Figure 1 (cartoon, rainbow, N blue to C red):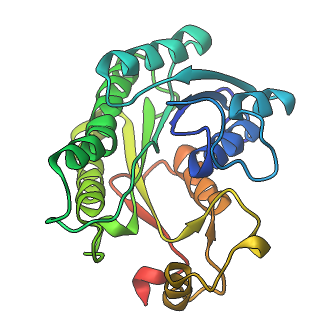
Figure 2 (cartoon, rainbow, N blue to C red):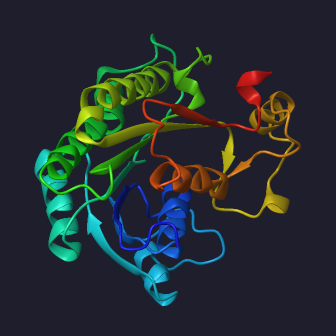
Length: 261
């Protein structure tokens, strides 16, 4: 198993992409700290059990820690829980996030602040506290720890009427680069993932592809389907594994070729 004995925090992992990452990591032997604002999944797919319960039912190792990533004290508790339970912290996946669509003129200050609090401040707090813990522990081989930031292809382009969301994701991508440069000498690897259009919480055959948004996304995606949460989980597994030992500061597109088209 590729993550045997490693400990991973996955934020925003009660549902969707984060849930898929947590499940994949556990199936590869990781101890997983499932972190979210709520324990019950919003989008669960086939199984409505909380993520940590599903992992333990599969004989994996997981605990749930309720966390608002915009709250520094809550993030401290999250990292402390991981270390108290499993002795160290090897992987942090920053997946928690908010999304809404609006132009700059239609974005209220309150909406801007809340989105930035979760998407950008939350990643900052999690990286800061996670990297501090990694700096205090012995490396495994060459690596003290790994950070994986789940951004979006929207952080690489100017998607119409996704002003605040795109700005936050662009900031997340730049934070990935900066941290990779600053902490490489300490054996800390930092990478990002930029998903394209990902369908979560439903079966592919149940997706209404006549929806204009999905219809447009499908027309822009060269691969003959839209993405699944498991596609992102596979990318995260690679970045979390020993196979990724000389790759840092990279933003891995998981978009079926959208950004190449």
